[in-house]
Length: 124
Image 1 (cartoon, rainbow, N blue to C red):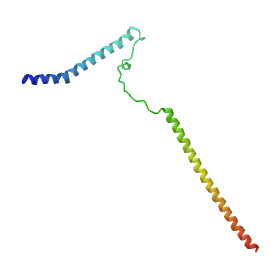
Image 2 (image 1 turned 30 degrees about the vertical axis):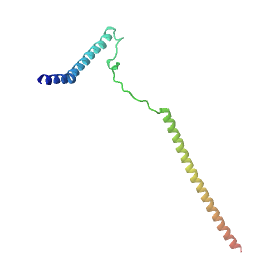
Image 3 (image 1 turned 180 degrees about the vertical axis):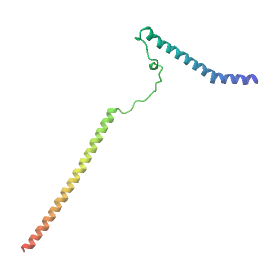
C-alpha cells in the first residue's frame, strides 16, 4: 500500500512540478543562448550584423479575424448617410417655406376679398 501511495505521489509530482521546472529551465537556457548570440554578432562585425532579440520570431502572435467590412465601405456609407440627412433637412425646410408661402397667399387673398366687399358696400 505504501509503495502505491508513493508511486502516485511521485507521478503527481512529475506531471505537475518537475516537468514545469524542466520547461522553465529550458526557457532560461535558450534565452541565455539567444542573448549571447544577439550580443556576439554586433561585437564581431563592428555593429553591422545583429538582431534585436525582442523582435525575433518567438514573439507572441495573436490570431485575429479580419473585419467583414472594409474601411472604405464604412467611409462611403457615412458619406451616403450625411447626404441623405442633408436632403432630408433641405426637403423639410422647402416644405416649411412652401407652407408659409401658401399661408401668406391665402391671407392676402382673404384680405383682398374683405377689402373688395367693403369697397362694394361703400359704392352702393
